[in-house]
Length: 71
Image (cartoon, rainbow, N blue to C red; front, top):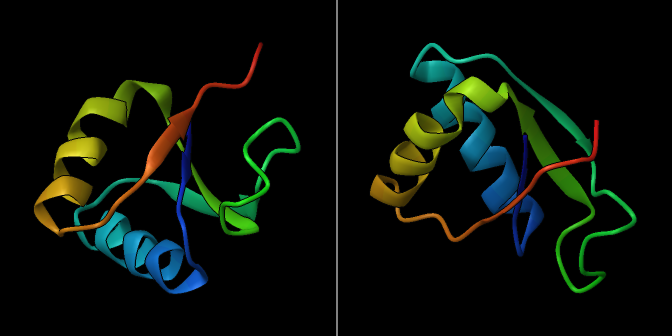
């Protein structure tokens, strides 16, 4: 699961929040299929953690979009 953000600052803040909550994540380039108006960085996380991480990011006040790459 890929989490997309408007700014690099938001992506870095999200990474810190996700790791602090004990979830695995990795900073990756924004997928080319995602809107070019979004930040060039994205956060990859386990699909199984999507709902919990989404709630975490919402509570942190971070705006984001999700992107599920085709497997």
